[in-house]
Length: 92
Image 1 (cartoon, rainbow, N blue to C red):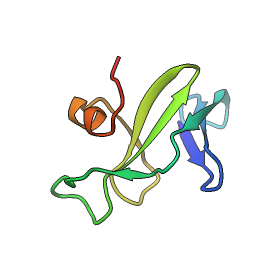
Image 2: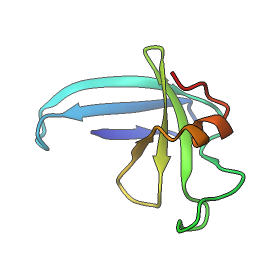
Image 3: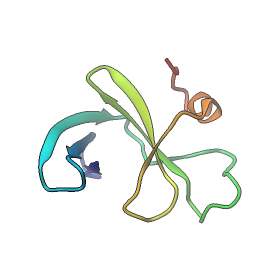
């Protein structure tokens, strides 16, 4: 999966590929909550300065929180209820 966003826009683009190949299966665009990336008020131990950072993104009516643990080409989708609560997002 590939994901990117533009600082000047409130959109994120996700692309899903087949088996690490260049065959794109799906591409969707989501709406990002403005003001991101967001950091927690009390940063988690063991992370570099300014990390983890979060983006709240909604695609087709479904909201998820993308977590960036450090400057790297890997992202995570968090289901940590404490993070969702602190960021003010209702977890469904």
